[in-house]
Image (cartoon, rainbow, N blue to C red):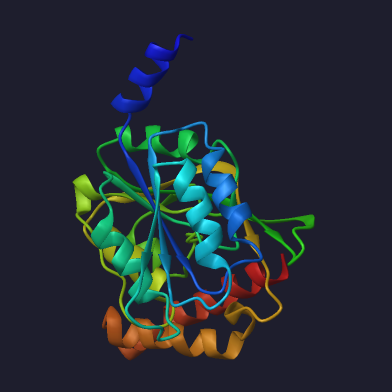
Length: 261
């Protein structure tokens, strides 16, 4: 393929905005950025939101920024320990039709965006997601794959968050820009809000991302996760107590199955 034809393909493809919050991420962020730069789908922008890091995070990102104009580094005004502020800063800055998320310690396969973007040709599809594989803190793989349903709507998603945030991507032309709430389990609340508008989500039926299990990761505190889930059912989507109990039991069951994978 000639360079001119290749450039035409890149510029005609819709822009994907990738939002990456980063707080003291020097150990892994270079690998995360490399996985974005390796994408076979090349019309993307990577918006790195530095959340008041005190290590070499900014220095590392700036070195990439100097060599790839698709990468930009921005700062939050303060650090409050929640991912909502940096993610919302990224949403405000995003120029792409599609918005996706990648934490600074996770990784994508190089065909993730190439596999996902074409599925939005279906006018009913507002979210595309994939399966993902768990890796340990050192990046070691053990075939621990978390598989999501082939198709989701709002009612199905209420049973539990089947969308791994590192795999999800949504279409702003169909649902607008969606801000993240300043709560725990904010990603689940966001995907619920997107699907509440009536569209559907589709799985690529492939594994396109690697989720790094941190020894200090917040997802390891299962008791708090259960509490946060209840708060979403009652205070965010305003289900009745009976409905909340119903979906809560489903969530606990599927959450346990996901945990033991």
